[in-house]
Structure formats: structure tokens, C-alpha cells
Length: 326
Image (cartoon, rainbow, N blue to C red):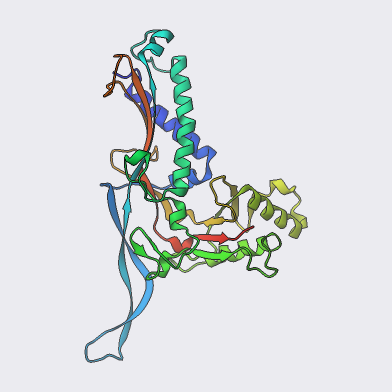
């Protein structure tokens, strides 16, 4: 029997998720819209905005009507898993305690949970960006696809969630080169490139420039800040205090690939989790197991932190990417 109560496990899960969201902007964006979906694989139907002329009558070929097909996206959930075992000897050394009382932790438990929290955050964040549909954890489950799979560098090719970007234009994110501006230099043109990319993305109503978050490397964000400062000398603030441009929040992230800048519309991205997982905790759960297949000491226990679900985007056309931003 675990020394953590069910209430404590749930409280730790919630606390960890809140911490992740406060420390990481992408996690906060995805976690602001979490929905439950039954089954490892689930489908969502969308109305395509691509209009094609179709005949309205067999004998009246000159009469035509515009229509948009219904398309069905198929998403697959995956799992990110982290565990750490505490042996009975360690417990005995720390002092016997069958169950941790509310509000207290043994020193070794607190250290293990804190270490696992940091390790899991690193792995989970990496998968949110780079999940590629391949098997994870030594073959122990199918991976979800991450942000780099639905905001892609070549949006006119391939598929996402089983829907062809070639066939459906609203399934293509907007893409421009950072080196194709007026002076063919990203450093010189980064301000213009950001504005162009922002205005190029289109939401379901056909409106432009609705993205609200820009995520790039530290170097790219600094370049954008510098250019914004040099072109707007009346800002009345120092360069490092420029936290938004043209309504875009500036965020740096070490998981962004070199020379890439993402402009995201949070209204169309989120996370799907199975019914057994709490939407409040973004599908992340902390728990402990005391019955182990290779258990030697009856006091042995394993601490586990995992995520079950998938990030999802239901309108890629509202997202944008700048490539060759270097």
C-alpha cells in the first residue's frame, strides 16, 4: 500500500501541472484548452473551407453551387512516462512510516518527487514540441505528434491527423522565409518578416493577424526586440523590456529549432486526454505503486509521473512559421 493517500497523489499532480504552466508558455497555451476523448484513437470532423464548384443538376451542368467537404481528422494518443524506485532499505534508513500523514513528507520522498518533477518536465516539454508518432519508452507505447508536426516547414506536402495538406488548403499553416524580405537579411528584416507572417495566417472567419504568441530561440527573440527598439525610438523603455510586438507576446524556448520562429493562434490548439485523466491536470498524473513484478523487499515502492493524451490542432491555417530566420 502506498504511503501517499489518493488525495495527496492528486494534490501533487495538480501542483506539478500548475508549476509547469507557470514556467512554460507552450504548456500553458495547450493546457488552456483540454478536452476528454474516449479511446486511444479518436476522430474530429471539420468543415473544409476549400470551395469547389459542383454541378447542381444532371441536365443543367451550367448551374453550379459552392460547397465545402466535411473532413475527418484522426488523432492518436500517446504516453510519456517517468518512474523512480525507492527501496525498502532506503525507507528503513529514513524511518518506518507506512503512510505519510497529510501535509508532510519524509525527506527522501520529497527529494525523489522533486527530482522526478524536473526530469519529467524536460521529457514532456520535448515531446510537446517534437513528438513524431514514433514509439517511445523502449517501444512501450505510441507517441503523440507534437507542435512541429502540425506547424511544419513545408506546409504544402504531407498529412496531419490523416488529412492531406495537398488537398485541403486550410490544413496548411502559413510559411515564409526569414531571408526573403526587402534586404534578404533576417537581421535587417526580422520586424517586417514577423508582421508578414502574422498577417499571412488566416482563421476560420477569414481574418488575418489573429495570432497572439511568437515563440523563437533566444537569439531570434533578441533580434526582434532590437529591431523593434531601433525602429520605435519613442517606446520609452529598454530593449529587454519589450515583451510584445504588434500584439504578439514574445517567448523564447530552447526546444525551437535553429532559424525557426513560430506564430501561434491559441484558439485552435489544445490537448486531448482520455476520460480517466483529469482535464484540470492536463492528463498528467503522479502516483506510487507498491506491488512490483520484481519486488525484493515488501517496502519497495515506485514513484510514477506520466502523461496520457495528445496535443492537437484543429485549424493549422491559423498558425505560422518563419524559416531561415538566421
